[in-house]
Image (cartoon, rainbow, N blue to C red):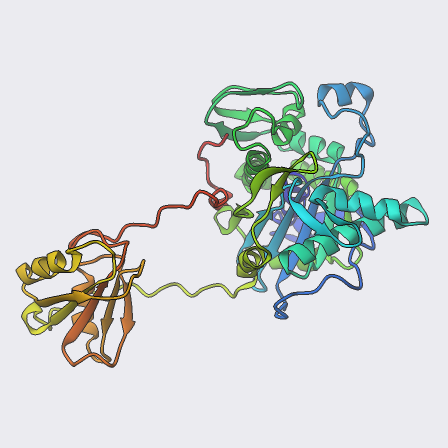
Length: 456
């Protein structure tokens, strides 16, 4: 979702000085506000929401401010579906501000919309707007609240804040940053979006930026490829905004922040200064982009949609965003030389399902000087080295023969004995375990903001 995500982070990541704080005051003063966060239907399923922040970022399919010539140039079409949310992302920022995780929510994802039954995610805002009464601002707030409730129910997360930007704001912001360098694996052309791009590395900006992030026809993965394009464009904008050229150009910084302020709408509770402070140390390598895994293209009631996996799988995926950052794994202990292989007995147990794997591995370990015996274990995917407390050096000696194997403690083992359970990831003694092959229904792999590999 290359509009509001880039806009929110871009201005905030320029805050390294008093000038930066002045700029965020300028942006905050000009941003519109709306009552986007509902009082119900927006709860954290796990009940562990804390100081971390989850924002729903929305690119609105609004043509307001575009001239007829711009509508034709940018292939936006007429104002039909003016209230559809064209692109959406969740942005999660941990309490310590050490990173930012973005997860794209494809517009065609088939979800439960509170009060309306199932439908495409991008219709939730419009349904809430149409149902509401009152002024245009009140009805827009109702649309935003219905979208927040829909996303919260789908993901199991509490949505803390909401931000949206319109088409014209995205076009202007793309122009200010001078375009973004992208790398296309193959040439693409789509008359519906106006996209027409050659293969290879190229700089895309201005009018082409909107065409680039809107194209889905002619791409092998359709809407899933489109959200990857949106992620890549956000990443490129962030790289540009954190570049020396931008950080030393006060005029360009001011133009960026003024554009963000004039084209964004935030919920009333989002304190721009708090968010800016929380994100001050984030760099491109700390920013990751993902898409919901397991989405399946299908047709329901004559409409092309993306059907998500089971609800528990979706919520399990999103719960990882709120998990505390994992501690850096300890480096495998190097054999300290105080243990001789001949003093170590290795029980080699075959859980790989490959006949003879334990016998072959035991023979190789014997050749390496260990005492080894073969046996069988229950089926397992993971090769594991187990040892008794106090036998860490012996276990390190065995683990060095199988790089990448998991190492665990098992005090049921005899002193001086190490168990090597061979899983389906086992390759051979002296070789690293094999990485698991990706399943066909996983989403695109996570990218960081400094990833320049080619995309569709």
